[in-house]
Every structure is written in structure tokens, then in C-alpha cells.
Length: 144
Image (cartoon, rainbow, N blue to C red; front, side, top):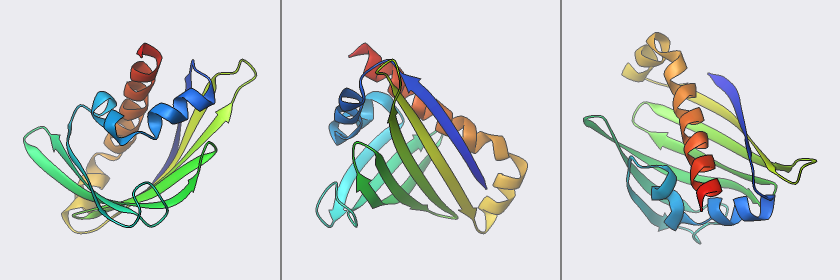
């Protein structure tokens, strides 16, 4: 499954990147986040791995983030491995004519096991969650 999401943030790109790139801000725009724990590699650099834990309803979802591209302020990309799900997110940040920021995400999911059934039955749920994260970040960034 592949899709793209985008949102315009009413802030200059440098400010957006400053807020986006600070792991201490994750809880501000991802309220379901329980834990973000650096595991290996130099934190925030290509190859670094982190353990991420979310509370989604009654379930806890654990994933491993691996940073694959760190070319800020233009791009920050990574893969996210969870039970039955592999996800790649390529984030791009563009300066608009109005000196705001256009954040675009190219997202790919691959599923195995039971998650193939979930993805087949509820394909829109994944895109809705991606858009929700982007909207929550926008609200956080513009409100700071």
C-alpha cells in the first residue's frame, strides 16, 4: 500500500524543522506515544535505531524506527518495523511562496500475517492515522 499526504504549516521551514527534529516534542503531537527510546547508532543520524511504543486503544504497538535519510531541512525519512507491518515514511519539507512550509510524506506499507487481513479490511485507517499525525504536528507547531 502506498499513498501521499501533505499539509501546509503557517511557519517558516527552519522553525518547522527545529520543532520536528526535537524528539522531546514527540509527545506534544503524538499523544498516544508512551516511549521513544534510542537503541543504537548515533541518535538522529542515518542508521540510528529507536524503539517506539504507542497506546492505540487497548493495544500497545511497539515498533523500531531506523533513520534512512537525514538531509534536513529538505528530507527526513525512515522505516518502522512492527509485528506484521513494515512502513517507510519519506518526509519532505518545502518553502512556499508565502514563506510557510509544505510538508509532504510519501508512505509505503507492507503487511504480513494477520495484518494483511486488517489492511485489506481497513485500508483507509492507515492514511487517516498519517493525516492525523500531520494535523497534530501542525496544531502543535503553530501553537508554540
